[in-house]
Each structure stands twice: as structure tokens, then as C-alpha cells.
Amino acid sequence: MNDAAAATPKKLQKQSILAGYLRALSDDADLRLAVRYAGGRPFAGSDERVLNVGWRFVSDVILSLLHLDPGDYHDLVIASGDIGEALTKVWPTSDDKNSRAMLDGGTAVPAVQGTSEPQTPEKPPVLSVNAVSHGRDARATGGELTLVEIAGAFDDLAAGGGTERKREILRQLFARCIDPREAAYLAKIIFREMRSGVREGVLQAAIAQAFDKSLAAIQRCQLFVGDLDEVALLARNNALDVAQLRLFHPIQFMLATPQETAKVAAETLGGRTFWSEDKLDGIRAQVHKSGNRIAIYTRTMDRTDESFPDVVAAIATLAGEFLLDGEIVPYRDGQVLPFAHIQRRLGRKVLTAKILRDNPATFIAFDILYKDGNLLMDCPLKLRRESLDSLALCSSLLTTERKPVVTADDISAAFDSARANRNEGIVLKDPESAYSPGRRGQWWLKLKTHLPTFDCVVTFAEYGHGKRRHVLSDYTFAVWDRAPTLPDATLVNVGKAYSGLTDVEIAELTQLFLSIAIAQHGRVFAVKPQVVLEIACDQIQRSTRHASGYALRFPRIKRIRTDKRPEDADVLSRIAELYESGHNFGRAAVQAEVPEPTLFD
Image (tube, rainbow, N blue to C red):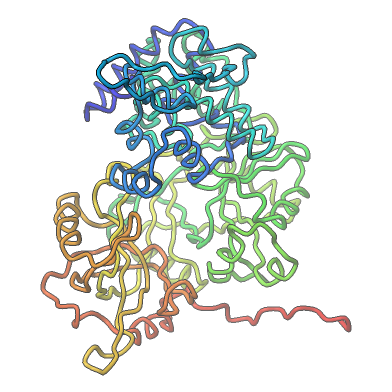
């Protein structure tokens, strides 16, 4: 099914193939799992469990089953783009008796000289497979590995129980795969790397087509219940209209359409009055609260509670049940600090008192989608803000300020005010707009500027992901540490970018970089300093990650500078100059960090 969908680039054909497959599934459990796995998820979207098996762990299991050389396997995965596609090239089929014997835990059976009949080994390999979670010998039952059996194995992996137990679960699960594509898709689901072009929108449309429902009804139901696999079940049972909003699953965020200038934004407004709010430089966040339970989700639909215990504590003081949209920002004494303070919290297993004290954060709300049993998303923004303001009035909740704007001069003044407040720009919102999850339109607009561009030399090129997994689309770039004419001038890296170029340009650069590569490290190639790119970014920050001592926020490629030689690229002093510029809000905080307390404090 997924192979057939992946084989066509046309969305309508993909959804038709999927619809036919889903419609033919009679069992409720199979329908749920088929939708879930087609989307590349081992668990439902609202299920916070994880498999806790990484690339190396799974690879060790595969290597033990296939008896492959680790180096050859590594090179094959790199060349194939992912483990799943690599397995299709080496996984034994049911007709390959010798390879199947190795897969089942034995060794290849040597042929007796002078005859084509294989010799029976003294101790034939026996694999006692119990379908992982169903207490029976799955191989003895015959047939292919079922969706329910895969789900049982995933449940067991998520439950933990030690390294050897996980290894055995995986070994038995992969050993059940009698077809290379079966093994490939098992790996793809484990690593959430389906790459068949079956995105959520295609799945939604397929479910709608399979059960004769409107796409809008499918999308609306998913908004309420969260999990598309449950939506499919409701659709088949003609029960979409019974779905009610459930908290604690992330809802897609409403997005703003970029505007290049205040004049362009005013033309979009067309004489209507919009509200202007400062565009905060933090982490877009969605806060769910019911009783003592609180969850915070980011734009990537991931939980981020552990990184912001102070924010969770502040939300816990608010009364009621609600769903808020807003921004987590570094914040002290009424002032938003540089984004770098937030970065120091992310990815840490332990947040010490010093880290929290030196990098304080708060949540600033600008919308409310649900409150005390009432769904507010369909209400005009002006009514939603009234509800939000009433919540903030009797609490410590911070909210954004609003200014009415109509003309280009109004918008320019609001923009200048936002930049003076160390915010990255403004968002213009129609007071009459409903909340439209996941959509850009003319209801919300955003205006922000970036620093002047600069020219950099590509030092590393890396294979991309998804449809770009076979091309070198991710580039690390550098500037000169001093004038390139001076002795010992060296290129020092300042960032990495993968957006801004067309597919044609990337394909051409891929051929060029492969021809000038001087070393390979897995998916990454070190290349001769030959290609110059014009780079734009929103901020420049201090960083120990790069030899330059700086890092770029939201870097993107403006164009390939075929008219420039590597020696024409910018010098590090230019980066330092832009870092100190008044337009760069990535500079270190003005206020000194609070010192670590001593015994005498």
C-alpha cells in the first residue's frame, strides 16, 4: 500500500490508493493501526510513549541477524538515505533458503559437493517467536507479520524492561519479516521516516474519500480528538459529529503571512483596521490546563514542560480549564532578553537553580482557544481577547498589547516601537478573524526585517532528508578570520543553512560538491572552499559551537554568488560589526547575570 502510494507523485492518486486500502479493512484495530503506520507513527499522536530504541541499537540487532560487515552496512545506509531503504537491498526473501536460515539464527547451509541438494545441519535453527505480545508462536500460525502483532511489539518496547529484553523483542520482530519491503517499512515506522509522500493532509483526504465524508469534517474532527486513527474509526461509523474537544493533544497553530514592507502590509489591509502586536522572539507555545494537569506544546507538537518548570509553576496558579496560545520568552524585570537565554535551557536533562536564575522565562499569551468547557476558536478574535483579558485581569498572566493600525504610517510606527522593545517585528491581526489552525491567510500578517546579508564560503555539504535525502542540500559555511591576503588566513564556520535554493540549483551543487569533496564523514562531505553563498539571518549570537565564536539565527540562502571567488567572501570582523549593530537583538543581555549565591548570602 505504501509502496504504491510512494510510487506516484500525484496527491490524488496517493489518496485514492490509500482510500481503497482503508475502506477494505473490516477490523477496527487494523484500521486504526493502518492510519497510524501510514503516517509513520509507532503510536497515536496523543500517546506520549516512545520506543526508546536508537539508530545504533536497531542497527546492532540488524547486523546480528544479517551477519553484515558494519562498515559495509554503514555505507549502504548512507547511500540509501535511511535504514529502511538499505534493508530492501540486503534482506533475504522467503525463497532464499540459506539467507533465511542465517536470519532465523543459524548459519548458511553449505551444498554437498556434486549435488544441488542442501545438507541438513545437525541442529536445525529454531526460533521461538511468540508474536511478541500475544503469547503464541506467530511463525507457526503462518502468514505475514500483522499490524496488531507490530503494535504489541511496540507496546512492549515502550514498557522498557532492560536492554536485552528490548534487543530480543526487536530481533524477533525483524525475524518475522519475510519480505524486504516488510523489513523496510518496519524500520521506517520505528524511526518515523516513512518518506512515501503520505503527509497528514493526504491521509485526511484518503479517510474522507474512503468513508464518503467531507475533508473539512475530517479536519474538524481531528482538531477535537487529536488522533487521526481515531478520526478514521469515527468516520467509518458515521460519528464525526459526536467528537468533542479534548485537551492535552497539540492543535496546529494559526500562522501569519509574511509582508515585505509596511506599504505592502497596508495594501493587504485594504483600509480595514487591524490590531498590531509585537512579534516576540521566543518559542511559540500552546498551554493546556485542566485541574492540576498542565502541558506545554511547541510548534513541532512536542512537549516542552521539563525545560520550563518556572512557567509551569506560574500557569498552575491560574484558575480554570483552558487552552492558550502564546510565546515563551526569556524575561527579567519587565524586559524580554535575547533568545540565547532560552537556548541554554533546551535539551538539558538537569536544570540547576543557577540555569533557571540566569535564564528566567515567562509565558506571554496572545490568544485563548478554549475556556471552562467553551470552545472559542470559531469566535472572532475580539471576543477571544475579551475572554483572555478577563483571565489575565485576576492573575499574573502576561498578555500582548494591541494597537489599532490602518495605514502604512501606522504600521511603520508600530514596527519601530516593537524593535525599540527588543522584539523582532509585529503581527497584524484582523479583530474579526476566527482561529484557523495550521493555516496562513490574510487574517494574520507578520512584518520583520533581517540584518544585512553577507557572503560566505561553503566548507561542508550534507545529504538532506525526505525528498532531499539523495542530494547535498545542507551547507555549512564560513568567513575568513582575517583578510584572505594575510598569512595564515583561515576560514571559520559561522552557520548552516538548507533553505533558499531551488531543486535545480541543489542538484547542480550536488554534482559540484561531489566532484570537489576532499573527505567524507558519513552523510557529510568536506569540500574545497570554492562555492560562495549570500546568507541572510535574523540575529547573530555568541556561540562556542563554531570556531568563529558566532552563530546565526534563522540563516537562509539568498543566492549563489557565482560572480565571487572564495577570497571575496566576508571577514569575521564584518560578523562582529553586525553583532554589535543596533539592529541585532541577539546580543548578550544588557543586565549582568545574577551571581551564584555563597554561604554568606
